[in-house]
Image (cartoon, rainbow, N blue to C red):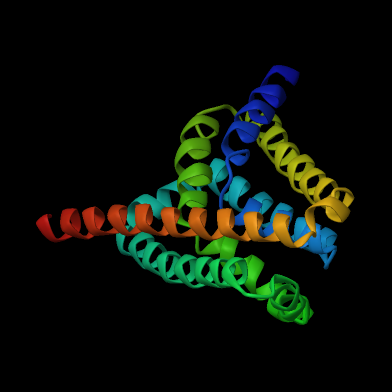
Length: 212
């Protein structure tokens, strides 16, 4: 059964490693050393729910509710544009230290709401967990399916805690004004690029729904 565990671990790592909204947020909170372990825990728990939902039957719900995916897509587009603008505004601020200090004043619940939005309003996470993992893991027998799910969940846990701790460890080097401008600029551009990709996918999805 270990072979199914490592299959899940490898596939889970391949899906989670690319830089996206969730990873960018975890990295930023790690650099700020602001609730970074709590953020990693929320991301890991969210992935646990999504992965198990996809592998153990949730993919059928998504396929039967195309309008649900459309709603999530456009909610994600709006959120990513807003979040990307905040990062770009910080990067272009005349005093990046003051801008970063303002961000640091965010309360715990605002940060929790943001990480949940980053996770649950990203349609890519449903495609990864419900479509990719659901189609591969869902066809396995019960025992291999559980080991496959355990492997993918383990990849998520190791990645988020590792990313948060590594970013916190590198914080003294990454909290300089120059580094903050670069990081926020990259994060802002990535958020907007993903938002535009989602918008393009959303338009095609709506057109296909109307055609049917």
